[in-house]
Structure formats: C-alpha cells, structure tokens
Length: 450
Image 1 (cartoon, one colour):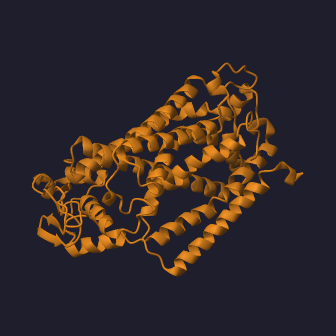
Image 2 (image 1 turned 90 degrees about the vertical axis):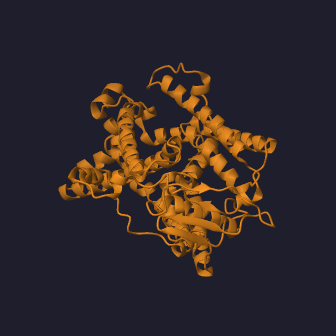
Image 3 (image 1 turned 180 degrees about the vertical axis):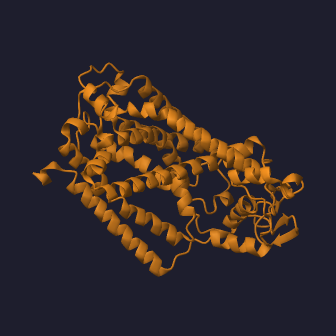
C-alpha cells in the first residue's frame, strides 16, 4: 500500500488524501447507501448497520484480493498476460485480463454443484447492486428533476411511468458504456471505478462535510463550488477518454497533466478547491437564517421544534399520496413574538381539514392536485395490465390522520439513543478502527513480510 508517491500506480499520499473524499461520498452521501440508512427504524440501528457493513468490508481482502493472487499464480500466461494478442485471445481485451481471475477460479476449480451456487451468488449480488442504483437514479430524477419540470403537477401514475422509462434509459447507457470500461488501464475494473469516483465525487464530499460542520455555508457557496468542482472533474474525465493510457511497450505521448498527475492527486485538488470556493463564496454572500439550520448541522441536530416543521412537510408531500394530495404549498411565514415560527399548521386532506398544533402553516391545494377521474374509477383489463406492469396501485383506502402524522413526525425527528446502545456502538467503532489500522500497517510495509 505504501508505494512510490510519483511513479507507482497507487501513490500512497494520493491514496490517503484522494481516496478519502470518494469514501466519504460513498458511505455518507451516495443515494444507494443513504436510502438503506434511512430505512432503519431509528438512529442506533442506522449506525449499527454502518458498523456491520464496516466489518463486512474486511472480507474482500480474503474473498477478492487473495483469490486474485492465487489465480495469477495458477495461470500467469492468461491472468497476467502482457502481450496484446494473447490478452485478446484470452479475454477479448487488449489491455489485460485481471477481471477474469475470479470467474476462472470458479469455473476451473469448483465442482459442478458449487459452480452453480457461486454463479447464483454472483448474479444475485450483481442484480441487487444494479436494482439499488437504478432505483436511486429513478428516484432522484423523478422527485428532484421531473417534478420541477412539471411544476409539481405530476400525478403519482406519471411519476411511476417516468421512473420506469428513466431506468430503461440507464440500462441502455450502461450497455453502450461497456466498450469504454474495457479500455481502462490494465483492464482493471477497480481502477476504473476509483478513477471515475476521484473525478466526480470530491466536490460532493466537500460540500456535504462543510454543510454538516459549518453553519455559515449557504446555498450560493454550495451550488457554485459544487458546479466548478464538478466541471473540473468532467474536463479531466473527457481528457482521459480522448487520451487513453498507452499499452505495454508503447511510448506515452499524452499531455503532462494527464500522464504525470495521478487521479488520486486530481481528487485531492478537486476536494480542497471546492472547500475553498464554498467558504469564500459563502462569506461574500448572505448567510442562511439560523432557524433554517435546525437539525441540519452537527451543532444544531438537537433543535427538534424547527426540525419537526421540515419533517412534517416531507411526510405530507411524499407519503400522503392520494388522500393528502401530491403537493404542498407553504404559505408565507408569519413570525411570532420570538421570531422562530408560527403557532400551528393546517393540513387539509380530501376527507376534510385536520389541525396539527405545532410547526408552521402548511396548506394543501387539493383541488388542483386531485387524481384524474378515470384513475379513481374502476378500469378495464388493459388499464389494469398497464398498472400492473408499471407497479401502480390506485387504492386510496389508507388515510393518514392528524394523530398519525404527528406520531410519524415525532418518530422521524427522534435521534436519541439509550446508554447501552451508545456504549455498544462506540465499542464497535473503536474495534473496527483498530482492525483497519492494523491491516494498514501489516499490509502497507514490505519489510514486515521479508
């Protein structure tokens, strides 16, 4: 792990400084991971799930890296091929055949029964990852982009169909992108994933970290620093496609900024550039009101009253479906005597009007967002088949009462932990940190293995 900082394929300063932003983004801000944490019943379970995943991350050393080393020893002329013609004949990739190491072990060494079992496991893991990615992508597109394009007038059926279509587009793009992945240095998929992450994720990680730890960060600083950082990463990404790595024995004629600056160092530069831009722009522009920071930073996470208002808004907007309408039109805020909010919130449902006694005023414009008449009536066979394919159900029997909304609000804003839970989580955090440090030392220095 502690390799040459200049000429190696994984320079150690770049690995520690450049891999950190990508890891921070993946474990803390990636939608695939975040949606799993949000599915936990409370904060303790969410933390416990992250720690369990950390223990599982120890296993790849024994389940992926060591089997790859074994395959390289067993078939050096295939897995470790260096001649383009040989590599092309072995795995249809002129850049290398390391990606076929694990399948070769499975297909050539395991008995027939275990072959099928391992293939089923590999396919199941692949399908699970793909469905998570596609689901996250469709959710972000439909909720954050399509609803704004439609000015919050899209029905639940429309969002469902648009999400399905977007998943289909993602699948097509993924298939068309395979030839570009095959051209990665040495044909190693791991390097490709880390390189792309190093170009696109550091700005997100920087803004995420600042948003949690620094209350002075505002929308202008976040947006423009993120855009500039992403633009720099995209430019670098385009350049590596235009100037691919030379094959073995071929002279490297790429520009120095491409040939001599490792992607880990690029990730480090993008991370700190985004931080400096975010801080500078935020200090030069108007700060966010303090009441809007409740529950959003580490220092204001226990301010529950204002948090409840935001959560109530999201409950009604994203879980109310038919009975609470699709949209929320937040009325103009009227400051009370202490300037922190309004005395009550009114939530209108199709069944009538319910009074929620805390938070600010939220009103639902149910007249403009009622389902279409044909969706609320009994439909024919073609419509039922269409709904079944799209995964849509028009059942509106379940309705959330004001009490249920308040109960859900209280549950979602509760971040308390018992002393026993805190102790168990902290002990496991220390253990997993020590294990990681030991692995870093043991496998990081060559003299320990001489």
